[in-house]
Length: 73
Image 1 (tube, rainbow, N blue to C red):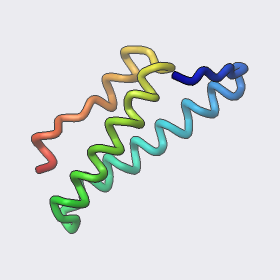
Image 2: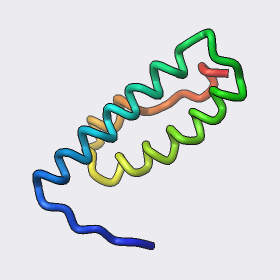
Image 3: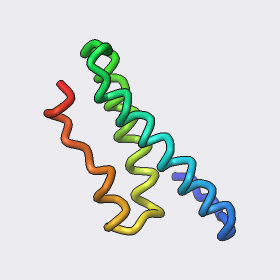
Image 4: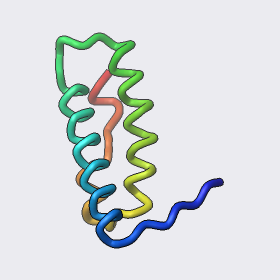
Protein backbone atom coordinates (compact mmCIF):
# COMPACT_ATOMS: atom_id res chain seq x y z
CA UNK A 1 0.00 0.00 0.00
CA UNK A 2 1.23 3.46 -0.87
CA UNK A 3 0.32 6.68 0.86
CA UNK A 4 0.32 10.19 -0.55
CA UNK A 5 -0.30 13.46 1.25
CA UNK A 6 -2.16 16.18 -0.65
CA UNK A 7 -2.86 19.75 0.34
CA UNK A 8 -6.38 21.14 -0.21
CA UNK A 9 -5.63 22.54 -3.65
CA UNK A 10 -4.09 19.28 -4.83
CA UNK A 11 -7.02 17.30 -3.44
CA UNK A 12 -9.49 19.49 -5.34
CA UNK A 13 -7.47 19.04 -8.52
CA UNK A 14 -7.39 15.26 -8.06
CA UNK A 15 -11.15 15.30 -7.48
CA UNK A 16 -11.65 17.26 -10.70
CA UNK A 17 -9.38 15.00 -12.77
CA UNK A 18 -11.01 11.81 -11.51
CA UNK A 19 -14.53 13.16 -12.11
CA UNK A 20 -13.66 14.18 -15.67
CA UNK A 21 -12.12 10.78 -16.36
CA UNK A 22 -15.23 9.03 -15.01
CA UNK A 23 -17.45 11.28 -17.16
CA UNK A 24 -15.43 10.47 -20.28
CA UNK A 25 -15.59 6.75 -19.62
CA UNK A 26 -19.36 6.93 -19.05
CA UNK A 27 -19.72 8.64 -22.42
CA UNK A 28 -17.62 5.93 -24.06
CA UNK A 29 -19.67 3.18 -22.41
CA UNK A 30 -22.85 4.70 -23.82
CA UNK A 31 -21.38 4.84 -27.34
CA UNK A 32 -23.13 2.18 -29.42
CA UNK A 33 -20.27 2.11 -31.94
CA UNK A 34 -17.90 0.43 -29.48
CA UNK A 35 -17.87 -3.36 -29.30
CA UNK A 36 -18.07 -5.55 -26.20
CA UNK A 37 -14.32 -6.09 -25.74
CA UNK A 38 -13.61 -2.38 -25.68
CA UNK A 39 -16.50 -1.73 -23.31
CA UNK A 40 -15.21 -4.47 -21.03
CA UNK A 41 -11.76 -2.86 -20.93
CA UNK A 42 -13.31 0.55 -20.19
CA UNK A 43 -15.47 -0.99 -17.45
CA UNK A 44 -12.42 -2.52 -15.76
CA UNK A 45 -10.60 0.81 -15.87
CA UNK A 46 -13.74 2.60 -14.66
CA UNK A 47 -13.85 0.40 -11.56
CA UNK A 48 -10.25 1.29 -10.69
CA UNK A 49 -10.77 5.04 -11.14
CA UNK A 50 -14.09 4.83 -9.27
CA UNK A 51 -12.36 3.23 -6.27
CA UNK A 52 -9.78 6.02 -6.31
CA UNK A 53 -12.54 8.63 -6.44
CA UNK A 54 -14.41 6.87 -3.62
CA UNK A 55 -11.54 7.65 -1.26
CA UNK A 56 -12.01 11.42 -1.57
CA UNK A 57 -15.66 11.92 -2.58
CA UNK A 58 -18.73 12.28 -0.42
CA UNK A 59 -21.38 9.55 -0.68
CA UNK A 60 -23.71 11.97 -2.48
CA UNK A 61 -21.08 12.77 -5.13
CA UNK A 62 -20.10 9.13 -5.39
CA UNK A 63 -23.65 7.96 -6.07
CA UNK A 64 -23.62 10.01 -9.27
CA UNK A 65 -20.93 7.70 -10.68
CA UNK A 66 -22.30 4.36 -9.49
CA UNK A 67 -22.12 2.06 -12.48
CA UNK A 68 -24.79 -0.42 -13.53
CA UNK A 69 -22.60 -2.83 -15.50
CA UNK A 70 -25.52 -4.78 -16.94
CA UNK A 71 -26.68 -1.77 -18.95
CA UNK A 72 -23.41 -1.64 -20.93
CA UNK A 73 -23.22 -5.24 -22.15
